[in-house]
Amino acid sequence: MKNILYYIIAIVAFFIILVDLPENFKISLPLGGQKLEWTINPPTLNTKIFGKKIKRDFKTKYGLDLKGGSRLVFEADTSSLKSEDVNDAIKSARDIMEKRVNFFGVSESNVKTLKSNGKYRIVVELPEVTNVEEAVKIIGKTAQLEFREEGSASAKFASAPAILKLNKSTGVTGKDVKRASITFNPQTGKPEVALEFTDKGAKLFADATRRNVGKPVGIFLDNMLISAPTVQQEITGGHAVITGSFTLDEAKKMVLEINSGALPISVKLVKQEIVGPSLGKEEVAKSVKAGVIGLSAVILFMIMYYGRLGLIASLALLIYGLISFAIFRLIPVVLTLPGIAGFILSIGMAVDSNILIFERIKEEQRKGRDFEIANKVGFGRAIDAIKDANFTTLLVAFILFNPLNWDFLPQFGMVRGFALTLAIGVATSLFTGVFITKYLISFFYKEKNG
Image (cartoon, rainbow, N blue to C red; front, side, top):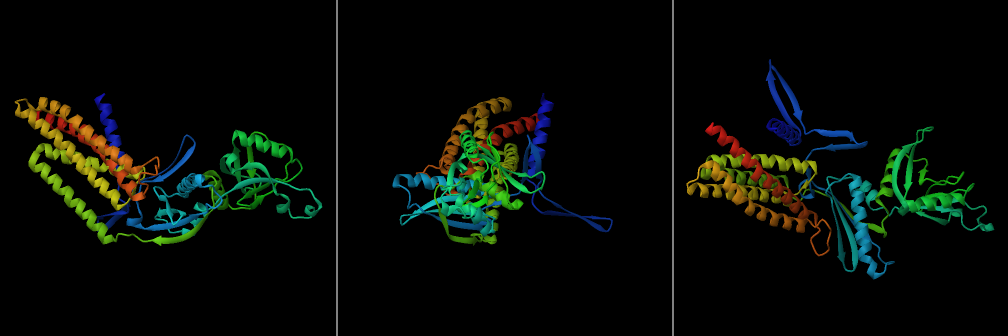
C-alpha cells in the first residue's frame, strides 16, 4: 500500500513540475566544440475527453496592470424599461457579456457595471487582448435571433422583396434554442449552423413549418436576413439548420452569439482603448525582488530558530510554492499585482502554521516527552488553531471574491484577483503546513534515528 502511495506522489510531483516549467527558458550546453541549445516551455494539452475536445496551455496569464490589454465601455439604453426592471436587465446584460468574453477566449477578465449621472455603463477589461474591433463585434452585439414568416397578403406586398414579405414573427426566437453548433454540408462542404431547440421551441418550430409548407421562413439575426429556405414539409424533432454563403469564421461567430444569448437591452460603445501595463517592468521587477528578499528572510529565520525543523518547514514552503503556482496555471488565474500580494500573504499563513506546530512540539518536549510522542501530540493540539485561522481567512476571501455577485459586496477584478490567490494559497498552505510537513518530519527523523 505504501509503495502505491509513493508512486502516486511521484506521478503528481512530476505533473506539478511539468506545469510549473518556465516559459521560453533557453538551455545551452557545450558538446564537442559545438553548442546544444533548446528552449523549455510548459506542456500544451490538446486531446479529447469523453468526446469533448480540450485544448489548453499552461502559461502564466497576466492582468492589465502587468501585461496590458483592452478596455471597452458600453452604455446601456434603459429608456424603454420600467424603473423596477432596470437593475435586472443590467445584471442580465453584464452576465451575457461576461459569457461572450469567455467564448472569446479571455479567462478571468473583468466585467463590471457602473452608474454615473443616471446612466448605466458596462466596463469590459480584457487582459492581453489588443484586437479591439473584433472584441467589440462579439461582446457588444445585441444578437437577436428570430424566425419570421410572410405577413400581410395584400396587393402592395405582391412584388415586394422577400425581406419585406417576411415581416411576421413565427414566435420562435433565440430563447427557444438550446444549443447551436457548426456542421458541414456533405454535398457542398460549406459550413452550416445546426440548431437544437428546447421542448417549447421544438413545438413552436413544428407549428411554424407546418403552416408554411411551400413558403419561405426567414431566419434573422439582429434584423438581418441570414437565409430564407422554402419549407418542404413540417419539421419535427427539434432540429434545424441555417445555411447561407458565410465563411467558417462567420459561422463560428454566429454560433457564439446564439449560444451566449441575446442582450436584454441595446448597448452602444462609448469608449475603447488599448491599455498599456499600468506598472512598468521596473516596478514589477522591484516587487518580485521584494518578495524574494522577504521569502529568503523567512527561510533564514526558520532555519536559525528551529534548526532541522526550520529546514523541513522551508522545504515544505518550496513544495507549497510549486503546488500553488501549478494551480494558478491550471485554473488559470490571471495574475495582477494585488493577486501576487494575496499569494505572498498566504506564504505568511503557511509559515504561521509551521510555527504553531513547532511551538507545540517544543512545549511537549519541555514536559519531558521524547520527540516522537511530542510530535504526535504537538500536531494534534496545533491543528485546531490552524483550522480556525485558515477558515476565517477563507471566509474573508469568499466575501471579497463575491462569487454570487451580490451588489452590496465588491465586484472589481483586482479585488477578486487578490481574494482568489489568497484563497488558493491558504488552502494549499493548510495542506502543505499540516500533511506535507508532518510527512517530512516523520521521514527525516526516522532516517536520523535509523
